[in-house]
Length: 65
Image (tube, rainbow, N blue to C red; front, top):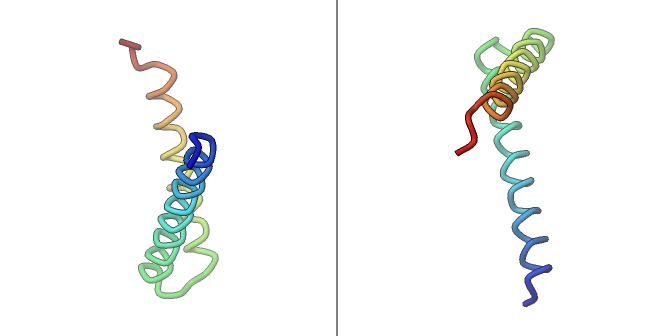
């Protein structure tokens, strides 16, 4: 198997794991909010925004070294 095919498989695997984690997290919020869809969506999106801001801050301001 060539290196390019291996990179494609690794990339697809990482994306699938990410999607599974997002679905699991949303279902967890849905269970926590007792099947209230709008509240679960708001909680999930706010959590994703918080994770995004934290990740951006770490990547932007963490000293490279």
